[in-house]
Image (cartoon, rainbow, N blue to C red; front, side, top):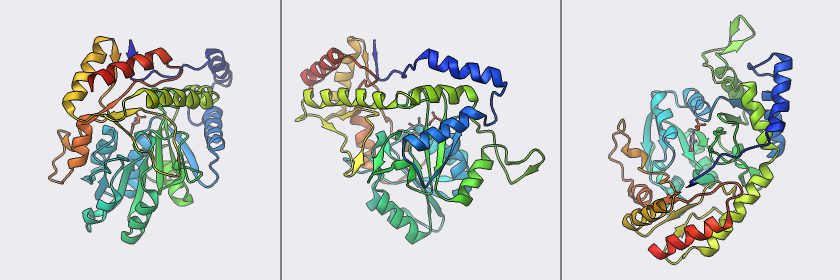
Length: 360
Ligand SMILES: *Cc1c(COP(=O)(O)O)cnc(C)c1O
């Protein structure tokens, strides 16, 4: 079976070494040495100097905390082309998603369409660097400044991505990442918030730990978003291998790019000045029927690509919108993520490309 992705399997001996430390210390959670070391190691690995990080239990909690602090129950300008967590977090925090259509090639929110969606109820822009492809962060920052809005980036797909030489996590008021097992860098379950404003970071930090200030006092409202020592240990084990993980995926992507019939299929256009992480390999078919036919043929051969992201989030059962989202609706019907994981067999990629090309 060839699945759309496989979780990276780190060296179990390395993990056991960390676990042994955890048992010896008797400190299983509540920000022990492993969580702190993971935070430090991530900043170090990504050469992040100006932002602070707090690791959390998953990639959704930091989104919710950011929305609680910055969204303030208002309208949030967001993308319909992302994983459900982007939209569900907005609704969960009693905010209202205002969908803005996506760019037809970059697939990120179309910054040219943001301003006309802003009203006096708008508090925030929550945009996704979808498949690790950076949004137009400069333009979005300009718009946010002009209208006094906050910017949150769902950077769940972005571990290792750089834009203009800087980690993509350093952009926006808050940037969040997911370390879920299906993501490029993972800790089983896990995630993080990145923030370059000391005051806001402080709020995020206490929000993820019940609002604690010492044992008896509280800074404010909080929930339990803490990462455990065991998850941090798994993260530390995977982090050691992150360069190999990215370079192995890069090799696979380059084979796909060489072998697919690009006259009949289009690929994600990566924004200029970006260093991409090869986290996903989406292809866009000419029609939904070609996609379905191809998917069926691949499934017959035990190959299981996934329709990411389908349907468009504006179709969620708890969403009502009459906004014009033609491009997102259209792309979501024609896009398929092909299998991509660490040390994927070359011959499997050849097979996949042959099947796809012969069905175009
Ligand atoms: C995976 C993902 C999330 C959620 O992360 P979890 O760690 O699973 O909570 C949020 N947004 C996007 C775009 C994702 O792909």
